[in-house]
Image 1: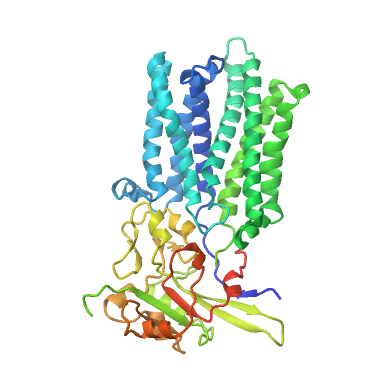
Image 2 (image 1 turned 90 degrees about the vertical axis):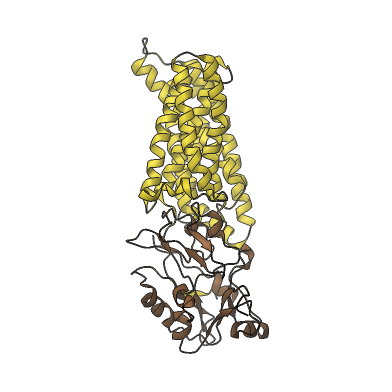
Length: 298
Length: 197
C-alpha cells in the first residue's frame, strides 16, 4: 500500500507569479533587442524597419521588468545590498549588474541609431548582443541552480529560456510592426514582405522551442522519482491544461500551422499567430516557475 | 580540546520518537516563530494496511549542511556558515529574495510574515553560544534527539554515531547534512502530500 501522509506542513511558495512575469519581460526584451540588431548590427537591411521599434521596446520592457523583482522581494529598501555584498556564485548577483549594464547599453545604442550614426549604433548593437543573451540567460541559471527542483535543475534551462525569448521577441515585433504600420505609417499599409519574412523565422524558432521542450520532457519522464512526478504533473496533473493546452497547443503548434500554411498567410493571421505565441510564452514562464516548485520537497 | 574546531550536528533516534510534536511546539516558543510557519515539524506517515500498519514520525529541522546550497545561491551573503558549522541568516542583510527557499532541498526555510526576511532553524544558536543545548533536545520527552560537537570524539553524539548505522535525508543532493537519523525509512522521505495552493 502507498504510504499515506497523515501530517505535514504546507510549504510557502518561493518564486511565484511576479518572478514568472519578470522572466517573461526580460525574455521579450532580449528577443526584441536581438531582432533590432539584425539590421543595425549585422547589416541585414530587409530588417531595417525593426531597428528602432526593437530597441525602444527592449528598453521600455527592461525598465518595467525589475519593478516586478522589487514587488517580489520582501525588503525592497535593502536592494542596494545586491551591489555591496557580492556573492559571485549566485546568479542573482550576476543579474543585478546585467540589469544595469543592459538597459544603459540599449539607451546608448538607441541614441546613436536615432541620430543615424550607423558606425556607433553598430558597435553598441554588437556589444548588446552578449548582454541581451546574458540578461535573459542568467534567469535560466537562477532556476537551474535550484538543484532540489527536478524541472529546473537542468543545463537545458538557460538555452530553453533563450530560445523562448527569441520566439516571444519575434512575435512581439510582428505584432508591433503591424500595429505601427496600420496606425502611424503614411500609407496605412502593412509591410507584408517584412512580416512574412519574420513569420518564417518565427515558425522555425517555434520548432526549435518545441524540440527543446520535448527533450526536457523525455528526460524528465525517465529520470529519478521527483522528475517523473513533475512530468506527470505537467502531462496529466494540475498543470496539464496550462502546459499542453495553452503553452504548447495554443501557443506553439497552432501558430506554427498558421505560419506555415501558405493559404492562411495574411497580415491578420500573422497578427493572430503572433498574439497566440506572445500569450503562450507567458504560460511557458508560468508553468516553468510555478509548476517547477509545485511538488513539495519533504 | 578548546582550540579544536567545532562542528555541531544532531542525531535523531526515530526508534524513540513517539510523534508528540513537543519539539515543534517548544521551537515555536523558543524562537518566536509566527503562526503558519515552522522551523521544525514532525511529518507523520502511515505505512501498511490494518492490522499491519505503522505510523512513522520524521522530525525535520534545518540540516545545517556541510555543503549548503543556500549559501551558494544567496546573492548578498545573508546566509553563511559559521565556523562551528551552523548555517545562519543575517537578519540585517537578508533582502527576502527567497532564492534560498527555492534552492533548499529540504524546504526548511520560510518568510517571516511581518519581517519579510527568510528564517529557519539555526540549532538554537543563541542557546548553543551560551553553552546550552537546543530547546528541542531538552524538551524531547523520550530523549530521542542528541546534539553535540561532531569533531569531538568524546561527545555523546560522536559516540552514538560510531555505534549506530545512521542515515541522512536526501544524500543524493551532495549537501552533506549534519542532522543524522537512526531508523529512517525511505518511503517516509519520499511520501508527499501536494500542498494546497
